[in-house]
Image (tube, rainbow, N blue to C red; front, side):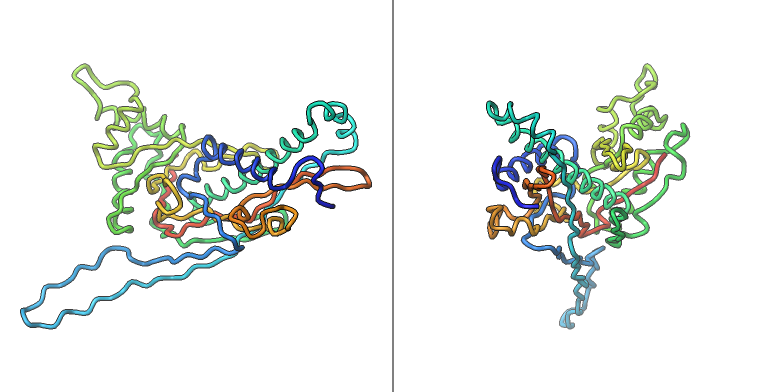
Length: 346
C-alpha cells in the first residue's frame, strides 16, 4: 500500500484523532488521571524503582561519640520495550463510487476518512485503557492476542491484592472496618503515604450505601435510613481518614463481547488523580514513536509531535481501495506498584 494524501495529510489527520482521543480520556477512559500520558521519542520505557519503604529511625548517641552510619535504599533501574498496536479499516471500490458525487460538493470522502481514523484511534485507546485497568487491578499487564503472548509484571506486594473476609453484599459485612485495615496496610507499605482515591463500580457503591455499618453511622434521632446518600457516605469516609470514591464503570468490546475495564467486584486504593505526568509516583502510560511518525511524508519526524498515536491513509490499486490506519506503541507502567491496592469485595 502507498501513502495517499489526496484527501488529507497525515499530520492533519493525526492532530484530528489526537483531539478526539483527548476528549475520550476526559469523559470515558478516565484511568489516564491515575496513569497519565508520557510521550517518549523511543520504543523503550525507563524508570527507577526505589526501595524507600518505611523510614528507618536514627539512634541517639552519647556526646562526643561518632555518628552512626546510615544506609541508602536500593534503587532498581527498570527498562522495557513498548509493544506496537495498530488497526486499519477499508473504504472499498463501491463505497468510493457512492461518495463521489457528494465529495464534489462537500468533501464527503475526507469526512469519511476522518470518521474512520477516529474509529481506529478509539480502538487503540480502548486497548490501552484495558491495559491500564489490568495494571491497576492486577499489578501487571497481560497480552495474549493476535499471536502475541507476554506478561509485564511490575512486582506489586502480595499484601496489596486481597479478598474481603465477607462479601460486601452480606448485611453483616463490616465494610468500613475492611477499608480501615486495608488503608493501614497501604500506609505501612508506603512510608505513611495515604491513598488519595478509592476506585470502584456503582455496583459496589450500591452495596456500601445499604450496609448497616454505614447506615448506623449516619443515623439520626429519628432512626437509621434504609439507604445512605452518596454525600453522607463520602462524609463518613472523610471523617475516618479515607479517600473519596471515584465510580468507574467503563466497558469496551473485546472479540464482540462487552468487557469491563475493571471488574465490578473490585475496590481499589490509588494515589489522588494526577494533574500531570510529574504529579504522581504511581506510574504513567508511555507512548513511543512509531515508524510511521519517522516517515518524512507524515511531516512529524524529529518534532515533539512524533510520539503518540498517528494516522494516515493508504491506497491500493487492485482492487481500488483506501485504507485508514491508526498506529501507536504504548504501555501503562507502574513505577511504584505498591501505590495500588486491590480488594475483591463481591
